[in-house]
Amino acid sequence: MLDAPSNRPALPPEIARRRTFAIISHPDAGKTTLTEKFLLFGGAIQMAGQVRAKGEARRTRSDYMQMEKDRGISVSASAMSFDFKNFRFNLVDTPGHSDFSEDTYRTLTAVDAAIMVIDGAKGVESQTRKLFEVCRLRDLPILTFCNKMDRESRDVFEIIDEIQENLAIDVTPASWPIGMGRDFVGAYDMLNDRLELMDRADRNKVADSIQISGLDDPKLAEHVPAGLLEQLKEEVEMARELLPALDKQAVLEGHMTPIWFGSAINSFGVKELMEGIGNYAPEPQPARAEPRQIAPEEQKVAGFVFKVQANMDPKHRDRVAFVRLASGHFERGMKLTHVRSKKAMTVSAPVLFLASDRELAEEAWAGDIIGIPNHGQLRIGDTLTEGETLKVTGIPSFAPELLQSVRAGDPMKAKHLEKALYQFAEEGAAKVFKPSIGSGYIVGVVGALQFEVLGARIESEYGLPVRFEPSQFTSARWVHGPKDAVETFAAKNTQHIATDNDGDTVYLTRMQWDIDRVERDYPEVTLSATKEMM
Ligand code: G4P
Image 1 (spheres, helix red, strand yellow):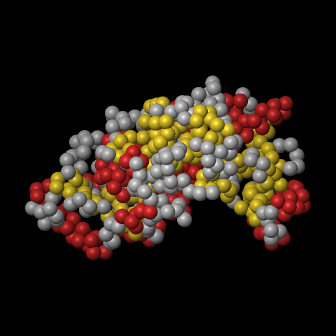
Image 2: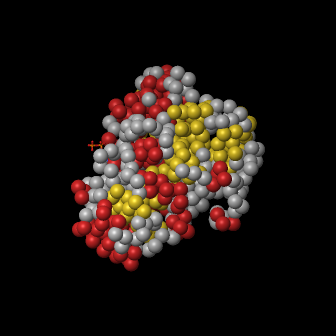
Image 3: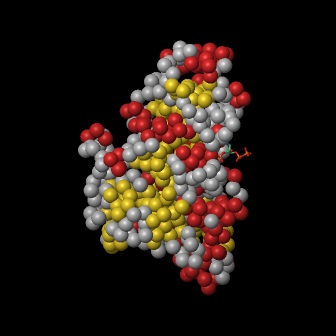
């Protein structure tokens, strides 16, 4: 169990003002648009339209490859830091495409809260639900933004009900929309008794809030048409009666989500949401680690790698490891211990992700994300400390859902292929299995698009044309158990056994029946669809 925040000493102010979060949503709900408005109000960009990474679901393969070429851009969009009021926000991007969901899951290990964006006309969609479940596993606090209220949307009570029923979380309205679609005029800020009106003339501007003294304030009638005002009063009254009031502790524990209604494209509701993130999302939280958890206020620096992105500069084959700082105050040039190899590394050129520019990070605090350029030493799941042997836990690796054999077009190049495959495996782009019988490799991914991207990258980065072919196997499971039990099991099932890129034993099969049989016949051995990253 993690310590409750109240049992911990006060955080240094620099850490206490940090909010590190991700946005979860179904493609098209408005994540990119909202991100852009965050950056706009965070002063990180001057104009909307500068965030180039668009909703990934709509990307064709060629778009994706183009994006791979523009890796500088996709990398700087992977983590973004900006200031809002007294807060420093770190927004970590989650790839929207379901083919890349493993990356998304791991990204969620690096944040302290999530913003769930839903489309007011569509409600809770499949991808949102999946991502929500991951947040729930980690008890992440969730704030909700119901977007596109400028369009015809569903009834507000219906939307709230759907979230409560579907996701089993209490919903409390932080704002209440006034009208919808063409009649949408703004929202009543239920937390601050303010009237917020939408400026339809300028999509990037926000009208000033109008402070009112409650729903009976005569000022309301000056701004809201009579019919809508009646409806607003009725609905807010009903909402106050039927829905739970905001309980900050319940939000922090992930049992309750406050919901804001707005329109990202019209910049409406975004500032209130940002205030909400500052007020209701948590400060940096302790990281789970062995043999002890790491608290952000510890003086010594510790951090962990949750993502690796390769070839930002294709000429140099460099990689950037994204590190979430778990504790302390980091300064450029610091010497940190890479716990897995026990080697010291001097972090001389760390990168901080200030919106569209990558900048050298002179300093960073617990909660921040920094990029560390390296030549492959840093892998997903690695921990860096100032010397202590600590290992951050809970960064999962998932069994792939699609398997294919891969061969080099030129058989003489098999060794090069191995190197390329292992590099991608370390980056987290694919799983690579070497069967105990035969000479080929089996590559496993979560979504089919990854095979294409992988093939294209091996060709462009290693000059190596490759062929993917159907594999006789469809499932992979990691084999766990006492060493001799695993060895005996492996020796009796060589046709099905492979090792992954970490050298761990894997059982490959095409039938669920096989997996059930193993569990029955070898009670000491367990087959698992996930493993902790080393
Ligand atoms: P995503 O990253 O979640 O996939 O969504 P994205 O922000 O790209 O938004 C998806 C579409 O929804 C975009 O349209 C965007 O302009 C639109 N959108 C975002 N917020 C709002 C909003 O508050 N109201 C309305 N009406 N639309 C919004 P698009 O890509 O330009 O497609 P199209 O509409 O031009 O066809």
